[in-house]
Length: 269
Image (cartoon, rainbow, N blue to C red; front, side, top):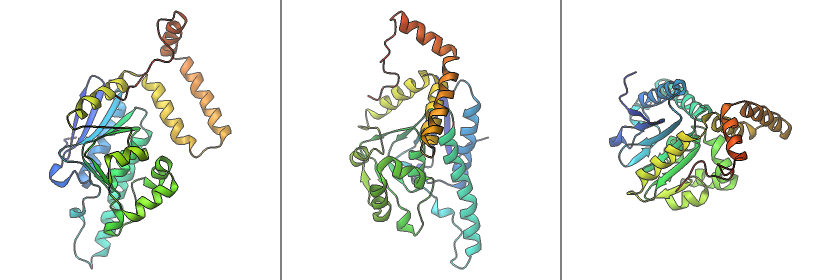
């Protein structure tokens, strides 16, 4: 499809989805959500894409629902209801796709994150940020309950008490506090950010995609499974792994000591 609210580039195994509504702090219009979902389905099918970066243009990463799209007129509750129902379908399909796609995803937080933007960030496997970024739940300030998969991911990442406090208080976090809470993996200065994102994405693309996909799937599914289920699926993944040519190459290198077993696969500088 022709993209209007996102940009999509692919180079050296890395696909970059860039939200491109900078005047709106990349607020998620229905078109932006639909385009992002379509882009993810497209990238899932491309064998030459081995890692996906999600970022924003301008001063914001993503500021959540585009409130300007909501039908106005307080009496038209049916129109508002229909609008949110349709928008939620796009939001949730996109969050599901980011979570389940069997390729590593990196959220490159270039600026402000608000509301649904948090859901996008949390759905990605890794997140790095500029040190000037800010993060705010925002839902409480507009009278809406939290959404975009945050009830699944947020408490698992920051802990239940901290998640409850943050959602209820609607406090804005700076990048350093987000790092301390585990919301992002690393923070960088504005000048160092593009190079750091490119280096991490290159490492993700160079890593064995099939193994990263299995790790990703297991970590998400393992949250809701018993120990017995987890270990059974782990064994299945191990058997798939050892039958892959990549394992044979790694084993040969290990035996000949041409490759260290503790070598760093993905570096976060």
